[in-house]
Amino acid sequence: MSDEEHHFESKADAGASKTYPQQAGTIRKNGYIVIKSRPCKVVEVSTSKTGKHGHAKCHFVAIDIFNGKKLEDIVPSSHNCDVPHVNRTDYQLIDISEDGFVSLLTETGGTKDDLRLPTDETLLSQIKDGFAEGKDLVVTVMSSMGEEQICALKDIGPK
Image (cartoon, rainbow, N blue to C red; front, top):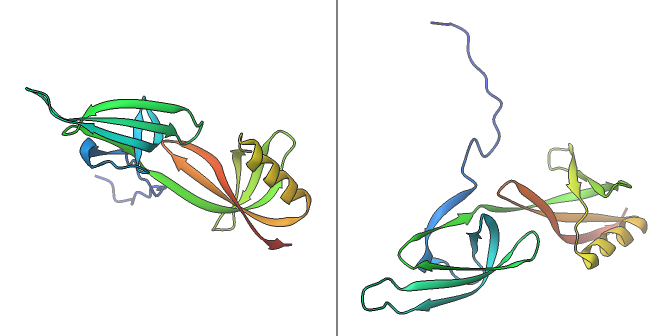
C-alpha cells in the first residue's frame, strides 16, 4: 500500500450527531427537545395515564431557543425523543459592522465574524449602547443543530 501518513483536520464534533435520543418520560421542564426539527426548551410537561390498551403519553410545550416560537408535541412516554446538543460559549465583542454582523474574539485569539446581532430588541440595544460607550462586553453565544445566536451579554468593565 502507501507508506505516507495521512493527516486529517479535525473539529471537536468529528461527525457527531446534532441530537441524541432520550426516553420521552425522562425529559423534564427546562430540558431541551427537538420538535418539528427545531431545538426547543421545554416549558411544560404533562403525562397522561395509559388507556385500556396503550402507552402513557407525554405532552410537551416548548419554546424554540432561536426564534421564540411556541411548539407542542405529544409522544408516548416509552418512546425516544431527539434531544439537541446545546452549547453556550462566551466571546469578547470586538466590533459591530454596519451590516449587522459582530466581530468576536475567540478563546484561541482568533476572530469569529459570521454571527449576526440578535433580533431581541432589548439585548440588541444593550449591546449597541454598551459598545458605543466603549465598555468591554462579553456575549454568550448559544449553538445547537448548526445554528448560532447571541443570547446574553455581560459587562466586564471599561476598556
